[in-house]
Length: 259
Image (cartoon, helix red, strand yellow):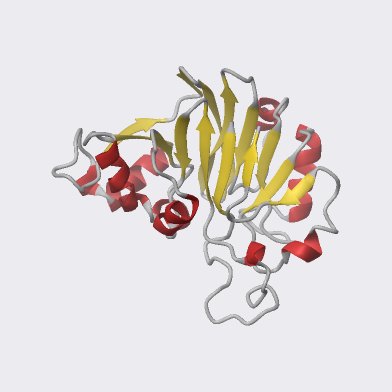
C-alpha cells in the first residue's frame, strides 16, 4: 500500500495570505502546506480522499494519473472545492461517472455545489460526473477493504477511514478534521501499521485536535508510525520535529509512505 500526502495544511493554507510570520516565510519546503488530502494506492486500486482548492496543482506535482474512486470525508470547502477537477479522471475512465462515497452531509454538499455533475455519464468529453453513494461501515473491494467511522468535527461528522490491503494485510487509518477520536474509532484503528491524525496547532481548538490531543490519541491507538496533518502556520517542521514523542511526526506535502 502507498499513501501520498497531497496536502497537509489548514483551510487557510501555509503560507497564509498577508502573513509574514517565521513559518509563512520559511525556506523549508515542508512548511509550504496546501489544503489537506491524500491519495491511497491499495493493490493497484487508486483511491482519492478529498479534493482541496489546490487539487489540480497537487495532482500535477505528484503525477496522479488515475483515480478509481473518490471519498469525501466531509463537505467543508477546503475538502470539496477541487472536485470539479476530477473531470479529467472521468475522461480516463472512459466517460463514466466517478464513484463518490461520503456521509449524508457530504453528499448534500456535492449536490448543492455540483448539480451539473450528478449523472450516470458526463454530458460530453471533458465534463465531470459523480455517482454518489453513502459510505458504508465496510466497503469490500477485490483489492481489500475500506472501513469507516464517524468523527466529531463541530457541527458535522467527518468520515474516519481505515484501509486494509488484501495482498499484504497492511492497515492504514486516516482520521483528519476531528475534535477527538471516539472509542469505536480507536478500536477500529488498532493494529494499523500507519495512523494519520488531525493535529491542528499547539493550543486547543473547538473543532480540531491540538497537537497534545493528537499525540494522546496516537498513544491510545498505539501504532508503530503516526503522522499529524491539517497543520497551521503556528508550527515549523524543523522545530516541532524535536518536540514530538517517538513514533509521531508531522506529515508534509509530497510525503510518500510505502507500507
